[in-house]
Length: 302
View (cartoon, one colour):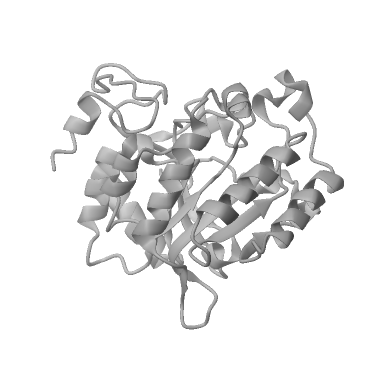
């Protein structure tokens, strides 16, 4: 496969900008060279991802969603990061493995897919830990299929059911229609979740993340019903999150310029339990903290 051609008329994400990223940038704001802001052990993912040693997390610069409330806005929308070559990225993967990482965790990587695939090719036979694809759920089927054989664990968000909410906060009216197809394909490619022999570290599978937003508990509940009715039982974990904290442009949207209430979160939890969606993880309400955002200080990149 000629990966360079994928940059020449870029349709890596559902924005379908169709621009030549050797010359200009598209919606993601990214050129044809990798930029990353941090590559280090991360302890704030789900327990089966972070484990005791940490997840070998690589935070890439740029994003195809650019949500108004993004907690990682300095890298997703403000360009913080350092250019990294394909060879350097492959060495970063091996270095994280040497540091004891339970996995290699690629965070918002889609805009660099034509460079990430050859980096992963370079470490085949050397990398003995799973590869995690940590994304916003807004992915094309073509991109997911291109990653078959490379990605062991999918960690997508499922942010919204409402096209009004997804347009208002992420500029993506088609978010749910795209994300539900993407997640079904992810499950198809990995099969049911698999853990290590101790039953603690994930080796393969899908974890669907959903962060409850202020004023949007009914939308969260609609997503739970989608999971119950349209996704195969026992073939994924769910991760319900209460950690929403007003960041970035949240102040421009009065209804989300606050944390969620205990009532809102408990209504979503109760519905998940009622539907039998109890395989996975549920945060404590007190988890709305800024500590989930690591310092983007170019650790592991310089």
